[in-house]
Image (cartoon, rainbow, N blue to C red):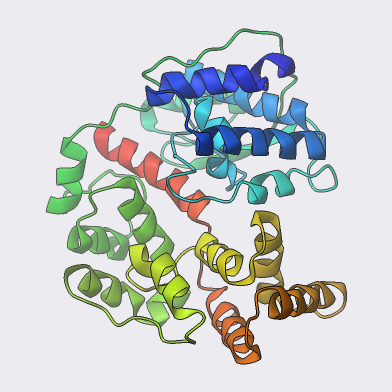
Length: 344
């Protein structure tokens, strides 16, 4: 099974079927990049078991929401129909997923799964997971050993989304929709009137204590309909920062935005930017602090960055790393919310 589903030609053929056109150079490069990461951590069997788990739950008419929040960041798993978030379109960092699957952090072939359970799904879920209650999330450890099989996702893998679902958000008719039992969250959706999965993810990522305390919910709604002030940090940073934050109306909402800014300013790769963001968030001295200093020294020389630009970047990152949330997680969550609005 592993050899079949992780063969690059097989994955690219599935991607072509899903997208309706031959893979572009960027899409092909991303698939090969992820396959190299999987080979590097030696977890081909674990990745194959994720695909097997996806098949198993969909065969039982359940909506799988994998406990590893970074799963939607994988373009390979998107190509194979495990999730429905275009990781390239949303600029998600695949390194965050495969780094979390390093053998030291997750036992082999043990997969954390979370399944959203609706009333009509309780009997099926109990058969697989044991005791569950309607409308609740169930977290469990499921051990899956890959079995030989031939699997080819068909063109209709994306959950059926009713056009009426979007009008429900616009009209504030959110009774029974996933997460909308929180009146403040429901009111935010009714006021913002989301029109895309990204909009739903944006609201989910902003409805957090740090953003609420900073008044960013009101800013989010107002900035959607009127111009907002650009960031002015340093002449070496401003163009990059404002370009990255434009889609979230100048507000730092996602971890991936910080990583993308670090990549573009410091000239580092995806994996380095992931480590750097975590260092800024933890403020740890010692080995991690030395890693940070090494990268910054290299950027001062190689990219000819002024020291005051580095200081401005450090302050900006450390101040915004905690309110930020995983874009990969909230995009996956947004799809479940949309599917819920289509179904209820």
